[in-house]
Amino acid sequence: MTPIFALATSLLWGLADFGGGLLTRRIPALTVVVVSQILALTALGTIVVATGGWSEATPRLWFAVAAGVIGPVAMLFFYRALAQGPMGVVAPVAALGGVLVPLGVGLAAGERPGVLQVAGIVVAVAGVVLASGPGGGAVRRQTLLLTLVAAFGFGTVMALIAEASHTLTGLFLALFVQRLCNVLVGGGALLVSARRGGAVLPEGGRSALLPALPALAFVGLADVAANGTYNLAAHSGPVTVAAVLASLYPVVTALTARGVLNERLRSVQASGAGLALVGTVLLATG
Image (cartoon, one colour):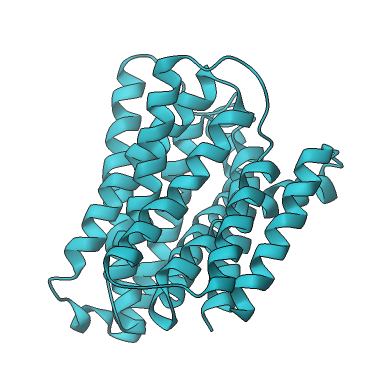
């Protein structure tokens, strides 16, 4: 089941990134993050109450707290890097963080992938880099530092959420706690930005924000579901396999943009998507 859950994670994260990317074209990015997480928090709270998730409170929830604090910080560093440097360099480097940190954790824990899985990891990682659209353009040292911090943060969140719970009802509670911390940290950053004169609402004010609520809810819920399926993937098989397959979300984002917005894939991106698929097959059969 690990490949199924991990690929579902890639699908959900890829769609969430696509939706979030569209929304940030007309709504401030930090507002998109905070509002989408508030809507997801509301849905998760309902699920936790309905399933009795509060009874699953254990010290493992501290992993969820840490993931909830680190996640928004990593995202803010990521957005700053995107604003300063070429997206074709920033995006794939940040995506690789989601592979390397959990991969290192799995190897340190004693996991040893087979020959086919090692080949699949190498091919899939190369595919992610290519499909994300690596390109030219000078990268300033500050931009590279911001990207590396974001990459480490994304990978750390994946590793933490995998340890936050070992039961389904406990997972709902862990995701709720993670989202609560996301909202607190992101909301604080949004308040600071507003006090410094930064934009909080889109042009047109609240009346322009209301029609976007369904899309914001989708982004938040898809992100939550992706964290959940990654937790299930990490517990149903090797973390090394789960991390690589879950990192294929840039391929999903690129293909969705091609289908919905008719964006043309460059040959290097198409080649990357093909390599990612090959790597997926190797990992699944290994």
